Image (cartoon, rainbow, N blue to C red):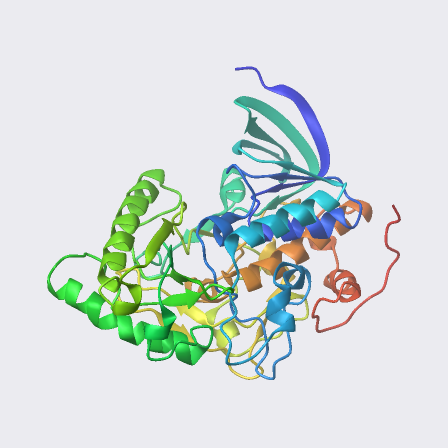
Length: 441
């Protein structure tokens, strides 16, 4: 099949999850021509199609937001209605609408959905072009700089970048989850009907647990999770269950993903059957099982600096800080057992350095999702939307600076310049901020 005529942009971003969208918005607002490519029918990634629901921790221990750039535009109520007692959640349909609205406002951003990355052309250490399947036809696209916002590092891998997968000792990756949404329950029949609070939702989990344990004891489910995890939707009329566990899923192997979705859906329906035995859920409705398997881990591209567990647990700061993360190290057992959750110590967050966004050996490629350079354990912290949104915003700004400052290598972009733009836009930064002339429309 013939490849269509070459299209040209300043920046090409592959992957329209939260990392890719935040990168596109950040770069487009600096008047760079951006192409955002997504293989699914719509934008949103895991946060939309895997129905995550929870707005993961984005505050220091003293309550200060440390991811308050574009993340604030995505989840404004998590900022304006903050309370330690309230469970911060979102509705995936509303989030998708927010993404679409923000992207539509930016005239410098072009979005291609239902478009799949096929090939990457690399010459002399630089990505020259990518081949995209669009409407069944291959299209060649060139740009000054490329961003890998695929959660699994697909662009980087095709470009020849080195990567790691899974635990260091055995290569196993975190278990995956098929979430599901339930409505039509009667909260007045619960011991604590205030399910929008942490105490209330924890009480609900404990009330439902015996029904699930009975099902496990009777051998009527193969779900290896020992407990129930669920979160309320903002309206309080629906609950998201994040309580299935599928092992052996490798997102770079489509066969394991297909099997994982089948097994996860089975576990979801079994768990719904179990909780329906509780009087409050006797007439409840299983609204749907999320259409996309919630995969927590894929490739981790080897970059100029690998973030370690020690960096997270030492609340490490870096001179080339371009993002921060406050979320716990959250590891879901690759064998399906209980998850481990370790808080970040005082001040409650750590820095993500610019070097971790730069793959080794390529001069015009940046990482813009959870595929940045980090260890298995560190990845368990920054992989969530609060961390990835900040990573994406930083990568988008860096890509824009690369273009309009006429750089030849992304390593030449100053972290102090990235922080200057972030600070102007209200994002949390620490370290030197160096002003410079910004482009005019």
